[in-house]
Image (cartoon, rainbow, N blue to C red; front, side, top):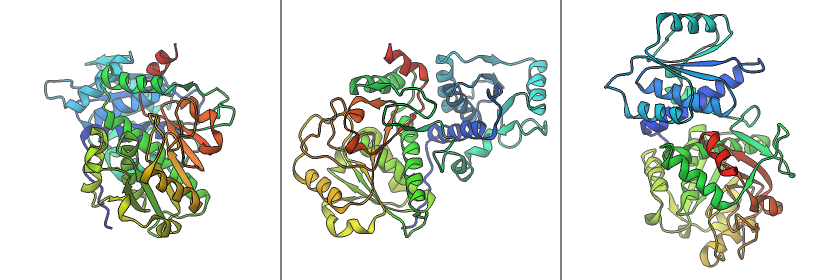
Length: 397
């Protein structure tokens, strides 16, 4: 298959670039605490990427201020949306700043006492010569963005290992939430902060790709066409995460097969959007019934389980149960998305049959059922979906 990176919607371009910018800030800076960050944002796509970076950095506890440059009636919708989100987060925003303010920001970058993300235009912005200047437009190049958005879990605040006692690498406890509480996080992010479901799904998938690549690297499986990955996708948002993952894994060079467990015509809206992007890349998913799974499974280095998510409340039966049984019997390493298929997200109960995962990457927050059934989950990771931290804090109140 010849994979071609599809043209992403501008909101996803800005989000992917913004996440990568934030990671580059966090990884380039050895100072503790990280120096304050100023985002110079004009009304184009680089400015939107800078605003997305501001959201991610603020979520990581970095002090951020935004300087609007040339805000006018020709503002792109993606910029206006990104500005609306950081406005909801109450980040400091300066509009049409005086020359002295801009000079002060540039001087702090030159002296390495502050970091400037220049989203004012395509190409170089400030010419301070300081290493603390980052051009947002560079990260809109998918290849440049890809190098920063996470080849490994090390020093990646967006993908964290969760220890068996529920603690994170920094020693803090991961907050275990019910399925209903996590659903409220998603709904608040979409309905009150205007973050689209497709955008949240892209962040979840990016974190899951990091987990998959890290696992394959540890097992000496190179990123080339000889390393085959099978993604089992259900028809809900869990399957959509898998479809979005397929693009990221193909960009890295793996040979990816996507198999639907169910009718692709009944996909959720966000999953259907990712199916369209995947087809635009040149990949055509197949139905699981078209595959002789027991015969094919030994050829795969990794199976990604995106069949069922946390909303499962019924017993797993029929064809899907046979698929899960075949994967378990094959003994191929499995990465589960959000929760192993067949596990109840609240109780941890096995609903008839469930995937036995080597790793599980869960999104937004740890679900209580994961901590109650560690044997099925394997090593647990928590991936950010990019929503403002205050949403999660409000749910925890």
